[in-house]
Length: 178
Image (cartoon, rainbow, N blue to C red; front, side, top):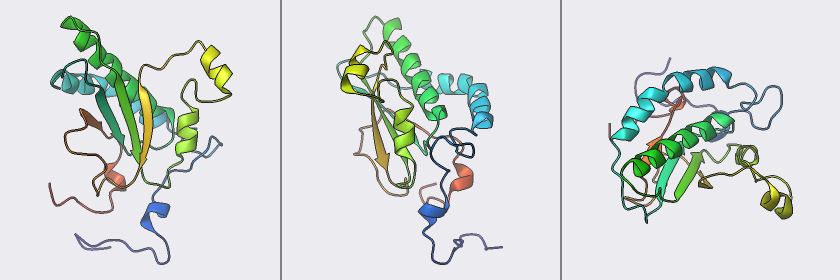
C-alpha cells in the first residue's frame, strides 16, 4: 500500500483515462447503473436546500451560475442542477423578484462522456425544427467544462454555487488548500 501522500502509479496509463466512468447508455454504462447514487442524492436534498438558503442572491439582472464538479454522464447531475435552479428561483420569487437567467456548467475530466450527458437534456437531440417544436423546456443554459479541478477552471468570482457529490473516492491527490 502506498504511504500517505504517495500517488499510485499505473505504468503507461494516464490517471485521467484510468479514473473515469463507462460512457454511453449501454448495459454497463454509468448512465444505466447509477441508481444507488440517485437514491443517496435524493436522501440528501434537504441538506442541499438548507445550504442554498444561505447563498447570497445577486441582482436578478446578473445570471446565476452553478457548477457540478465531477458530473459524470448520467441524469443524476441534471437532476441536482434542476433542484438548485428551482430552489434559487423560489428564493428570488419569495423576495418579489423574477428569477435571473441560470447557467449550469458540467465539469469532469476530459475522458468523461459529455456527448451522452448532453443528449440526456430535453431539446438536445434531433433537428433544429424538432428542438423548436418540442414541448419540453429547460430553464437554464448548459455548457461542459472538461478539466481537472486540481487546476483553475473558472474566473474568480464567476460562480455562485459549486456542487460535487460522490467524488472523494476518486481523488488522486489531496488539495494543499485544505
